[in-house]
Image (cartoon, rainbow, N blue to C red; front, side, top):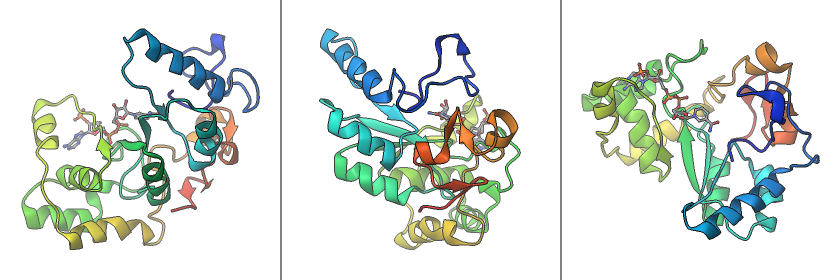
Amino acid sequence: MHWPQAGKPDSGEIWGNNTYRPNESPTFVETWKDMEKLLEGGKVKSIGVSNFSIKTLDVLLPQCTVVPVTNQVEMHPCLPQHDLKQYCESKGIILTAYSPLGQPTGTDQAISLFNIDTIKSIANKLNVDSAQVLLSWGVQRKTAVIPKTENKARMESNMTLLQLSDEDMKNIDELHLQPNMHRTLTFIGFGERILGEGNIFGWTYEELGWNMIDGFVVSK
Ligand SMILES: NC(=O)c1ccc[n+]([C@@H]2O[C@H](COP(=O)([O-])OP(=O)(O)OC[C@H]3O[C@@H](n4cnc5c(N)ncnc54)[C@H](OP(=O)(O)O)[C@@H]3O)[C@@H](O)[C@H]2O)c1
């Protein structure tokens, strides 16, 4: 389930605000119960969610017969989602990191992950590129990473991971604690520019359970 919000049938691929309200049918709990039925046919092997927070999972999980196999969320060193990771691990849900490179060419972010000193200096020390450091960190902390590239050489290097030292892992784990570093990279300005201030696809940050103010994420 791509998002907890359901898009209205006439909303097209880009929903904008054309979504049902949190308590309006189809709710994500109703959608999940229909997804569980898909497993009975044998063609669908596993089902999962995306963009769920602790808040929305707390509503969903008590209603589940099948626990989501994964929760796919934006995750990288500026948004390590330590609290969500701990929560999902306690429930047996694997976290999948989307935009694990911070969409370096996708949006005009204020911070490029590749240029963060901590990342650059580890990459230089190990003679690899910054993307390999970011992806190795994601895998080593037991999350699944799904970098996207249309370039064969980058695809190969993205699959060539390395073992980071405990010290390097700790430094990357903690870099989001530096001033202005803890933030979403992919949703900067998204709410204001496309969807109206303070919401994503028609739900407020609070309804989504995203502790976010102007692109800066408050929770750790
Ligand atoms: N569930 C959701 O709501 C959601 C939201 C966003 C994304 N996603 C999924 O997450 C996956 C990846 O996320 P993403 O595309 O947003 O972000 P990303 O993987 O962090 O960044 C992709 C960008 O990085 C570039 N890139 C890849 N490897 C590189 C390397 N080694 N060096 C330099 N640049 C590199 C790619 O350009 P080139 O192609 O030119 O290499 C591409 O522009 C996609 O499959 C996407 O569908 C899911």
